Image 1 (cartoon, one colour):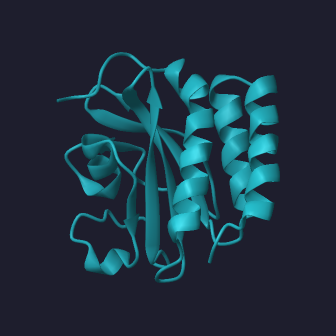
Image 2: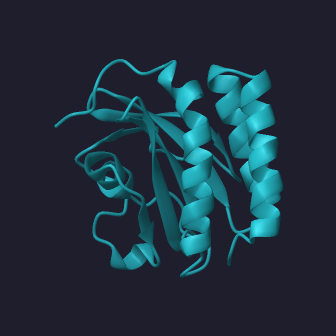
Image 3: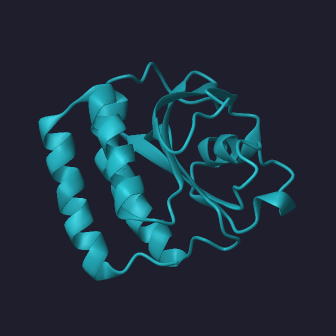
Length: 163
């Protein structure tokens, strides 16, 4: 699936409004809900903050909770995105040995680092139920979303990420 420009622009304006009126965890929770409600191929949406060498789940929206509420940066696709400071898109999670399984129906994942003052402070994690669910348009859109999450996440941040 794709995120068309005509859908991305108003969604980003709505996200600006959310982070303009809410702060911290409530802002993150509303962003997760909004993304999942607005884009049907985003089946599970989570925001993790980086706490030392561990990613800590701060907000999520989806059919059910994940058991992965704390992820060491040495593990998983989420850890890779934090370690490398770059967006990681996995077309088929079953073919990625680093994938930490959350839900049997998950087939694709995209993880986008969130930066504040030039350093990774967290990330946006999206799961999908179809192989190849995400493409370059999702990457561009979610990287713009991640820029909007820097203030709510930076309020939790407690230091630089591990080297």
